[in-house]
Every structure is written in structure tokens, then in C-alpha cells.
Image (tube, rainbow, N blue to C red; front, side, top):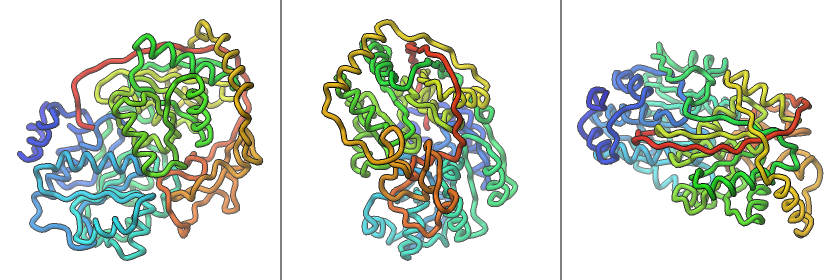
Length: 483
């Protein structure tokens, strides 16, 4: 099937041609005709399946056919995303797809100037992409109204709920016209998403391109069992071998905490490997610079927390490393979805410590995939000794007070966060006076990350395990498809 067969207008087809996009992805084939009809839609699709184009192309088409533009201080299409990076990616795609349609596009996210947002919105915009916290701030300051919204899109809805945005979403939706079209997209389908869809969607069409909570077929998945103190040496060795052999292009490394991400970057630097970190404690310019260097291949390794990585849509990511396994299995699905994008192949390698065995078991149960066990690579013991020697000779850092692994007792707090779910107490679990409930009146300066990266609540367990490891590499290339 071609885009011409989906009923899109000529300006849209010309814009796609300029981007060398010819064949729609499965989610686009299913969703575009439905959205063009004006129906509400519930889409279950993993990242990297082309869902941004699935809702943006037909929405631009519908908006272009309208007889009026957006009134001052309002918008005609509102897209809500959980993180700044994802909002930026969606806005960029909207500009590309609508390049010949004459529509205006703006994005508003935390960490940027409210004055500039006021300037963007003063005359009204056709398409507004926003994170929930900043949007509510602008509404409260009467910079923006939602009275003219014709199309609402909730993207990465499961992530927004995990981050505690449910109160913000309810407040926003209550301000929208009843006759709007609503499109909801999620990578997984937990009960909360079903409840959200039942409340806000009217007789929606359902589209799904993969079984719920399964991982991409083009991602090879491996696990190596290793003691926690030796993970850094293993990661260093695998990166050295992978880049030396030419098997790795761009590599994304996941940690559970912001402090942990910075620590991995520092240790890699001491071994002569350049890497950047992206997480909620980084300023918006720092995050944008890190993403730009990663996208251009100037820095080939990005160390990220789960929430910050939600906006990384870069086809060249060949490998994903889980330096620490996520304590919520659904996050694993989101993590490895950063590779094998746009038709390519990818590889996900998890470094599993003995006390992470329960997390691994949950991941395999959710995805119905048994990760391939890979032994420790040759030369590993020598690298461990080198790492220990570097640690002994390096100036001692002054560790933060309280907590474990250099974390503060209340969690890796950082700056105030968008819709945060409260701090984390022992073992990285949430433990605040409100029992983990978000405060809807709390100021929302940063977007998309709670105090400890927005991880949903999970009771820690202390499992047992062995010790082994992986070192495979793979990549592939096919034609481009719109994301």
C-alpha cells in the first residue's frame, strides 16, 4: 500500500515525498483512514512504529480543510506528551508534515521561558504540542485557553499515567469542547488506560499493531549475569569491543537514577570512552545539546534515565544496554523500543545482578520472551582489575548524605518535577507523606520526571542468582518510514 491509497491530500503527499517516505507502516495504514473520518481512536503501538505520523498526517489534512484558523491565545489541535524531548520530536514532525499546508506549530514545555510561550500563543496556533504541567501553568496564567480545540491527542498515555499526570489530564480534558475528536496512543494497555479511554473516547475505533506488552521482533535480546560492582567493567569492555569491531553505531545505556547515569558517564570517561548523560537534572539546553550530539554521531553513547529517553527517536541506535534492570517490567518494553526503529534491526543487552533476578523474571513473563544468556567476554577479569585500580587512584568523591549507592535518603530528588509522584524512600521506593499521590497544586517547573525518574511503585525483592554475561552485536538497515 502507498500513502496515495489512504486518502491524504496532495500537500501532505508532497511533503512526504520531500522526506522520501513512500510506504505507510501498519499503524499508519490502520489509523489514517479512521482519523480522516473524524472518529475517536484508541491505538496500541510500541515506539518506533510510526504512530506520530499515524495521527499527525490525517489531523493536518483535516485542519487544512477547515475554514478558519485558531483564535488568539488558543489552538485547534492539542497534543499532550509526557516529556520535553518527545514534545519536541512531535512538533518537529508536525512542521515537516505540514510544511506545504500553511499551518502554524508551537511547542510549550517546562524549563523554558514563559514569556516566549506567551509570545508564541498570542495570535493562536493551529497545532500545539505540550507537556501537561507547562500547559496548566499557561492556562492558570491566562496565556492560553482551550475553547477552540478540535483534535486532542494523548501520546504515550501509559507513561503519562505512570508519571502521575492523571490529575493534570483530567483538568485539561474538562476544559476542552465536548465535540472534539480524541486520539489516544499507548504502548501498553493496563487497566488505567482502559478506564481513561472509556471516560474520554466516544465509540472509538481500535487499532493495534503488536500484541500488548510484547517487544519488537527485530530486537535480539540478551542477558549477562554479573555482580553489581563489576557492571561498569563489563559495560566498558563490551563498548570497547563493539566499537572496535564496527558492530556498534549509536548506543543507549539505561540506568534507574540520575546520579547513576552521571556516574556511568564519568567512569566511561576515565576509560577513554566519551558519553553524554540525559536526565531531569540537566537543563533544557544541556538536554538539547546532548541529543543533538548523539543524533549527529558526534557522541556515540548516551546514558539515560527511563523518562528522559522517551523523546529519543533516532533510527541509528543499534544497541540498548540495561545497565540496571527496570523495577517495572513495562519500562523494559519502552527501553528496547529505542532500537530497531524505522525498519532496522537492533540489540538489547541486560546486565543482571543477583538482586535483579526478580525483575528479569517479571520482564520475561510480561514479554513472553526468554532472554538469551551470554557468558562473560574474554578479558573481562583484566578490565575489572583496571577499573578497580582507576577507582583506587581517582580522587575520592564526597558522597551525598543518607541512602544507598550514593543516593539521598529521600531519593534522587533534583529540581522540582512535572507531576512528580513524590520522593522515593528506601530501596528506591516511593515513600512520602501523601502515600505517593501527586499534589495537583504543586508547581511544575521540570517536565516528565518525578523525583526518582517517575518509576511506578514496585515492592523490592531480594532474589538470588549466578554470574555470567553477553557480548553480541547486530544491526541492519532498510528504507525510511515516517515515525
